[in-house]
Image 1 (tube, helix red, strand yellow):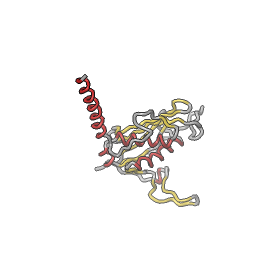
Image 2 (spheres, helix red, strand yellow):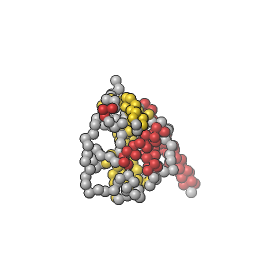
Image 3 (spheres, helix red, strand yellow):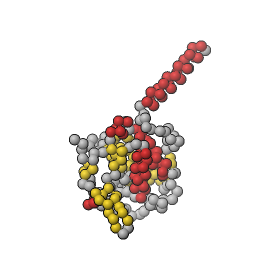
Image 4 (cartoon, one colour):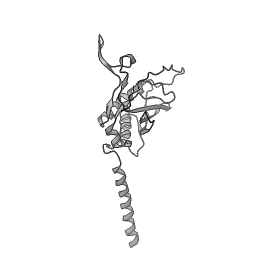
Length: 208
């Protein structure tokens, strides 16, 4: 009994010592939320799902890479085409800009025009018209993401941070989003296949 009494506290100490050592390697800016980390990452609230994606991306990226790089967030796309998006893909990306910026990521929005457009409808700076955008943007790591329906009301969202020059995956995230109304983000399955428009391209300058 005396030997067992000595061994058991030692085992407990080693376990907690190992957990302490592991936690030191986690990005110091990461703050665990009530939604994430070692729990089932399923969300019925899209805002919370996007927040979890940003938290996982922050958790998995080295602190140095986060501090030394700028980031471009692209639109989440349909996993099965990679060249098609939808209202939910655009909504996720827009929300992710806010979530990642609040976690101290340096975000570049490449959709800014060189001049402000003013007309009877208002004043505009953002655009998806390639002719109005800058031909080049500074070097940055790219945040990409996909969504995929796995049943009538469940979707898998995957996000990753990538280096476009090396194709290295720097960080990853995955959540499951469940929804009640497929009409909310135009997610109802349709019999006709949508037409895919060839994407425009913007060159990313490599830092010299």
